Length: 398
Image (cartoon, rainbow, N blue to C red; front, top):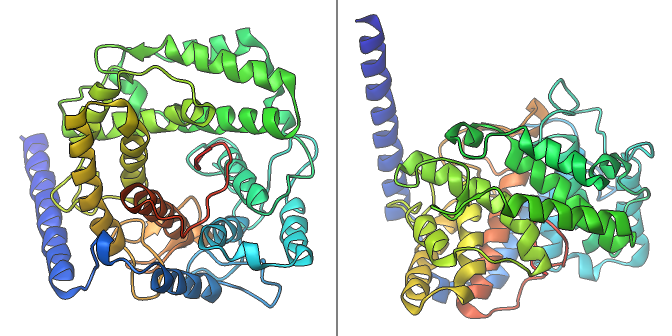
């Protein structure tokens, strides 16, 4: 009886929370002047975002940044998100070589030669080394995008990848998971695979590492054997269940990135797109909660845009309509300070207090991720090249 009461209370609380968020979002829509993609002014948008980034500078160096206004210390996460976002806005192109070198030297100061990973003492905690949605490996994946945008590369190669040069090591690692069970979706393995795989691609491309090149092919081959061909995705989740479907698409996004970057894949595109379209909610975002997160949104946006050339004409029309709706929603997540939020109306702790943000305060992760979404959608819908994208494994088009 007690369990039933607790369950009912949880249901009422969740329903009330959803109702409140829906009400707040509808008010925000009614009172806002969010432009559609046709009325989108790239120059004004760039100015607002740059103003937010500039406000996060911690000193005159121009390379040290806070994560949000409630944070007190500069972090490497704050700086790398600033660098990547400035790159998309075209700001880095205007920098002198000496200024770019200052960014590179600053980034280099955090890298350890023995493994190639980056360590920031401000945010290091008990999950920093063992997580992949945040932490050392995750941060390194961001670092390569920043270095590429600066026309450079890290001081040291990623030596921690060397165990993955062994095909048997990769197979044993992946075989530790039950790829036919829905519980796989509760793990962080998709983020780890993306971090490892994309860094192997970078090691291959920027250090001409033949062993890393072979490891990439071994990893992609092994992952193809794990696909659930009934659904077209990985794992045994139920694509008809909204919550599981959302996580299934997020999981797949991380793995698809390895194939998209190399331009070689053979997936069930119509099936994948059909399920991904169903992740869109009434507000236009892609998540079960109406205030979908920056991660949920870009995961579906990325998959839909990349698979657009490979699906039927009907699916293409569906994608176009979906992305138009998503564009308005993503822009709605830009707040008064010019930055973006991870979720509207909610604070967000991103691994550490110094990488966290208060309710409706702009934050560096969300700003970079949502600007990236806007750039993808503007290019897709308008063919607009007003923004800059670098070619790098992980998050950006090759």
